[in-house]
Image 1 (tube, rainbow, N blue to C red):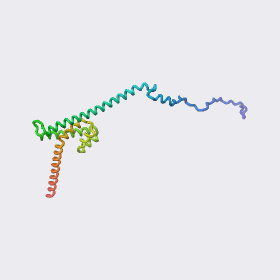
Image 2: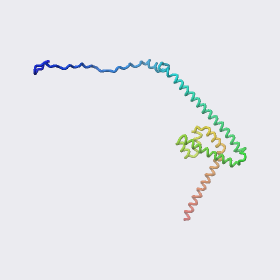
Image 3: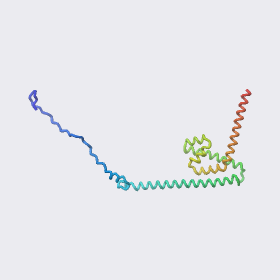
Length: 201
């Protein structure tokens, strides 16, 4: 090519040819549907090595669950037997035979003290299991007994406390009734005395 101004020949730089189009990354073709299903079934070659471990784990879980159910059923039946034996023995001691060398009133006191100790123990169970139930057991009267018989898993404690309530529950109720009546009378006398002092002044 000649320059039209000076008449000298012009030299153009060499240009590298560019690659046209997009450069796409090569990826493996997706598996066919039949191949994917065959690889995912338990009997395929990919999962054949993990199948014995899966079967062993499921068998161990089944054995553990069966053993737990059997232990719970045995605990329930044993607690029922303990309840019947204790109730029968305490009923005989309380109403028929008595305890050798012990007056009946003393026996009643021991029974009521045992119920009080069981009540405090039920509060401790509720506090150990759940803080909310523990607070309810402290604030709400008779809630510890409700928690013990309907929410707690301590079946043997339930049998012991149930036997005590059957035999000495009525004696405890009469004592609490008399005690509450005495407290109410004392409060009334105190109110009357305070009212009399206010009128005299």
